[in-house]
Length: 130
View (cartoon, rainbow, N blue to C red):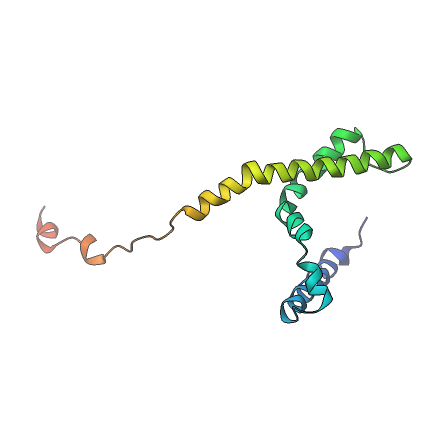
């Protein structure tokens, strides 16, 4: 069980640390750390990160059939297989499901006409009618 302070201060400090890493990489793009963050395979993992977050527990439960503790070489092999399966599933989900939906969203126009208040206000003759 996690200590109570971790739910507040611990996660806040962790988020601030990630923020500092990102700011550092943006402000100093030629540093080795910034170049590492631009590796193609890391960007690919970033594309499927949310899907991985959504499905990893499901696949762990499906392949393990119990809580996933690594107690033997077989458990380690199942964990590695589950990782590979999850990443492959999420990559295919991105290519054939999510990416087409994102493209549709990018094609959509979100410009809305602002109605003229004079057009919608009732005229004096309309107000005078009983």
